[in-house]
Length: 487
Image 1: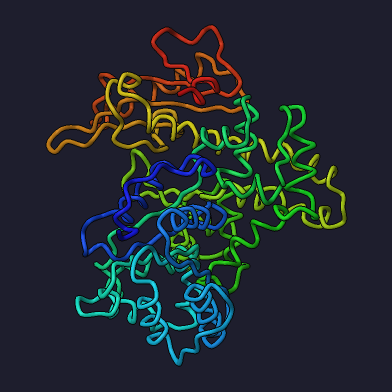
Image 2: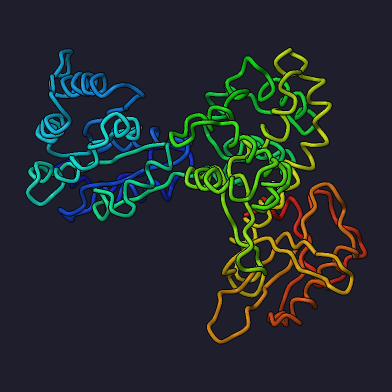
């Protein structure tokens, strides 16, 4: 019986979370359709892509090859060694003149099961014609069609992987699976780190995010015991030059193949980490014209190091945020203290940066977690499921100010009807929220109503990491750390 025809198998117990990803890979591996031949798996480094695919190949059999940054000749030689070992179970090497010969031999020797090529961008960099060769192999008369094997291309260079299926790319329209392995969400991350205290969970997540490898390989399972141990944990892990996590943020940027001169990219990321979310604000912060930073912003966005989100109430006004918490921590804290850190003055560097950490790292991160919570809230929380959740600014002409709304929950847009606002919320990490915060939200609601939004059923919400004052009126939704991590 073909290994592809195996019945569905349960996710291995050693794979944490990743139920959706495993189910998608399983559908690809077990699909009865003969046209299911190619899958693309991407995601930032350290997310466990290789771990997942290795587990899949263990279940279904096949061939697994991991590329490295090397010349085309070296890559062909290593590929020949790996394929010879697959064929005989011993040493030796197949010698190939080119990748067309190598692929033909590959599909002949692996007629069924799964073929995984990990870190594919390295191979396509050394041999740019490789995607076209794979396209021909997958054609109806191609040699890949002579067997039942299915090919999975995996990579961490998101810009490169994204272009494999874009525009006029050779593999466009060929893939039956396009899976992005994302970081664990904040709740799963807390479970993965075995952290039960939600305050500690937010602090840790604001540095390491949901990247699984940071707990296991990078800090070797060193977990802060409590909120009181957090400062010491920061000093002995992420600010410790002897720990891999110390330089990881710099490597994340350097690993992107589309990034050459890193100085301008660090400047852009530093500006965003400092709270400059608009294109004009970023340009002013680094002393450049807005037109000068268009390319760096596009590259960072394609690499999914930053994301551009539209203001909830002002179409055409985009706000940028950094997607990787460790980069925010590096740009806001480590980069400006690098000299002290390199000289081993860790405690002084952290003492000098802790206030910045709370205001520029934890505060914005907590707001993002609140928006994530709101986006996936159950129907009864806001009266219906959210259509979109974003931050936004409401102009107050009478008072000549602007009201920042941290969590704006919008209903699905309906043609011919005013946009309905399900909820307006303010988030504070380190401040007890009071009736004054509610008054500001109420003012924003009234101003938006004048602008034509439907606010008749808008729920006002306070999100806080420090608690709520008794003067907050009934009917205002309170979301604390317990609520944020429940469910």
